[in-house]
Amino acid sequence: MDGSSKKCYETEFLYNDTTEFYADSVEWCPFSKYADYLACGTYQLEETEVKSDETQTRKGGVTLYRLLCKEENVTLRKIYSYDSCGVLDMKWCPQLYGNCAYLIVACSSGQVLLLKLVDEENSVSLKLESCQTLEKNTKNMVLSIDRSCESEMNIIASDTLGSLNYLTLKDSSLLLLNRWKAHNFESWICAFDYAQPHMLFSGGDDCCFKGWDLRSLSSSIFVNKRHSMGVTAISKSTKREHLLVTGSYDENIFLWDTRSIKSPLSEVLVGGGVWRLKWHPYNPDYLLSASMHNGFHVLSVTSDSLNIISDYKKHESLAYGVDWCWLNAQNDDPLKEFNSSSNKSNFVASCSFYDKLLHVWKINL
Image 1 (cartoon, rainbow, N blue to C red):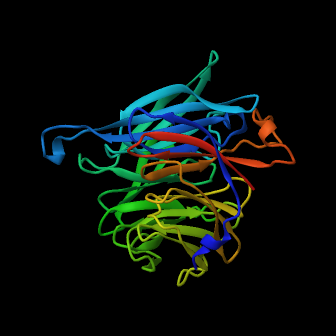
Image 2: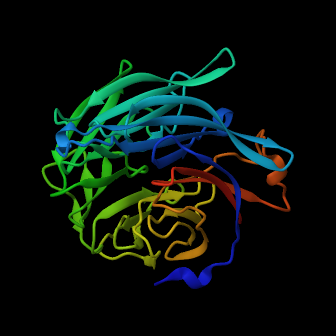
C-alpha cells in the first residue's frame, strides 16, 4: 500500500552546512557522553582528463561535528576532519571497547577502516586504529558495512564484486575471517540480525534479498526476489526482534517478519529509490528513509504496517545519508529546551550528494 495519505507531522529546519566533497553518509554517536557528535562521510571522483577508470581516484573522508545550542538556535561546529579516500558507508560500534567509541568506515579503496574517537586535553579527534583491505583489486569498493551487537567487534561488509566479507577485531587489528560470493552484481547492502548474530542479510543489484548463516555458508538460507530492482537498503530493528525493512531502486520499502520471508507484511512506495533506512534509537514505531530522488521520509511502523507520516525535501540533490540523533531528554541533554514535555522533539541529520549539503532538522512526534 502507499501510505502517503497518513502524513500528519511537520518537520522543521534547524541548521545546514556545506561539505568539502559530495556528502553521502551521516551517523550520530550512540553514547550519552558523545550523543551530540555527528560523523559525516564524503565521496568524490577526482576530476581527470584520463578516461580509464583504473587511473581515477576517489577522495573524501569523515568530518566530525558537534551539535551546539544557544537559546533556541542550533548549530554544528566542525571538530575534526579525517582525510581518506571516498567514504560510502559508516557505522558506530554499538558498545564501547576499552571505554572508547569506534567508527567503522567503508571505503572506495576496498578497505575497511576502524577509527577511534580520541578525547584528550579538551580536544576530540578521530585516529586510525586498524585498516583491512578486502581484495587486492583497485576497482573494488566497499559499499556498505554493519556491526553485530555482541561483546566482540564483528563486522560484515559488502562490495562491488558481489561479495560479503566477515571481519573481527583481535589485538587492535581488523582480521578478515571469511569472504564469499553473495550476488551476481554489486552487493549494495548487508546487515546483521542483531537478535541472532550468526545470521546475516544482504541485497544486491541482481534484485535479490538473501539470508545467510555464518555457521554454514555453502548456500544462502533464502533468496527473495520481491523487489523488482536492486536491493539497496536493509535494516533490522533492535527493539522488535523479528521486524526488518528493505528498500530498493524500485522506490518501495517492504516490512518483513524474519520468521517468514515469503511475503512482506506491508509495503510503501516512497517515490524515490531508497538508499538508507534507520530505525528510531528509542521508539520502534518510527523509521527514517533516505529516498534518493525524492528527499527524506519519516514512517510509522506497527507490527504489520508501514505509513509515511512526514517528509523533508529541503535538499536539492540525491538524498543519501540520514540518521536520528541519540540525545535523550532524560539525560544531560544540551538541547533540553527543545525537548520539553510539551514539545517532544526528535533531531535528524541528513545529507545530499552533489549539492554537498548537511542538514539538521526536527520532527515533533
